[in-house]
Length: 171
Figure (cartoon, helix red, strand yellow):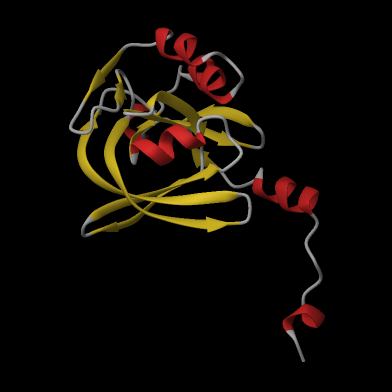
């Protein structure tokens, strides 16, 4: 008996609706290098291992920024703070790239990728492996530098909306 006969196919809309109930941190992923400067908003980011420190980032191969990230092979995961909703929308839409970066203050770290001032955390990374699954590539990213900001609170995406995250001691 095959698995196909045991498990009904999951419809795309059903899957998306269920995934909207899975909360995630909101991140702006940035890069700068030989292919230029680019950035996009993503919630598909997670830790893989701490030895060596590695994250994964999922990126749609049809995204306009895809070739830039693929050629630069480096990026920075900037985890957004409460109050960064407008910036998230800029990087998640069709806003011209220059206008996205003008809207915030940036510095650079080891790779030269843009690091967002005021982010909860920024993980400066080199892409070490790429795995294709369906419409997306999973970028495995070794962390070569990081910045932490303990003075701010996080921002989550849940049920198709933004939600500020507060630390327990802030209540």
